[in-house]
Length: 314
Ligand code: 3HC
Image 1: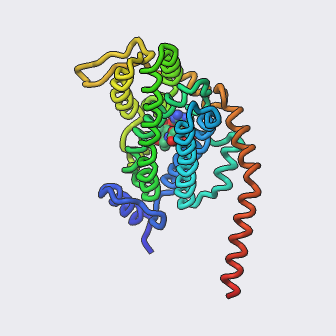
Image 2 (image 1 turned 90 degrees about the vertical axis):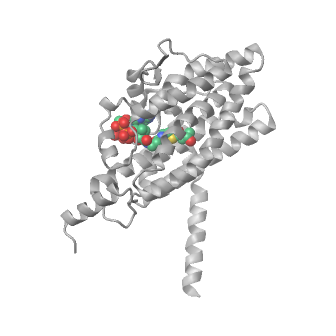
Image 3 (image 1 turned 120 degrees about the horizontal axis):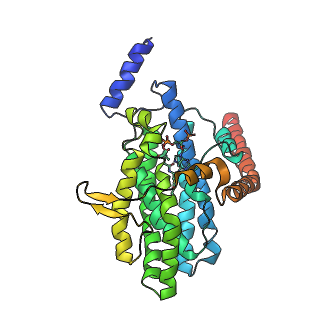
């Protein structure tokens, strides 16, 4: 039986060689806990993220727009399932993870605590929020934990469709009537800074990032991804003829990137403490959906039990 020192050495050499850590491999307990924390919150974000957009399915401006939004919202539910399954490979119980979400103990992405007030918001969410999620998730395809990386590869394929459908909505509006363009600008004004918060607090204030980089769970830091997001998105806004609501946004030739204003981090911590515009409404909707779906879970479990009995009896 290997002693802990050998096990740690083997774990470290896996990371150095960029090999995946798999569920059956030995891993430091804190590595496991770190992953369960991050992957479960990622999963919670996916299923809560269905709510602000689901709110517009019945009000989509055309049948095509409705079908596209339906497909996107369904995808998010699937992303949540991949991620809960990845968390379960670490020994987490899905019921406990969902309980932590439903009782307000667990975090999910702050961005979903903002309201979607107009159809332009659905465009801004797809373009900006899914755009930011892709920035983060493309990086996470190289995470050291095998099941998480494989979930990311699957999710990123669908996420790029999400971002494109949002940007298509923003194109329709920005190149439409004056009133439509104003709607698009209003949505950009309201979603820009909350989207920047999705990448997490500044690296200097991030208690988890240092260790996440050491364990190759994260391959880029919060600030690096935020910078990449801004540099990529400014040109997209320019193409739309929209103005990023940041008077300090300015190209910095020396760093070959944009200088920009920091989001309001006091607002960020307030939202993740549960005091955002929609936190209460989101958890109520999520708890109701879980209660309303109990009969489906019970029926599926009863069917699975019966099937197992028949197999054993055969
Ligand atoms: N919303 C809520 N909580 C946040 C947050 C945010 N935007 N950013 C950071 N936090 C929390 C962290 O969870 C941590 O709290 P905890 O220790 O209690 O878990 C604390 O703030 C400090 O942040 P750190 O930077 O130290 O934490 P991490 O190293 O975990 O980095 C993260 C935060 C970048 C969000 C990282 O967890 C991550 O990459 N998670 C996976 C990606 C993810 O969850 N994306 C959310 C959006 S998913 C989505 O948008 C779906 C799309 O289809 C629409």
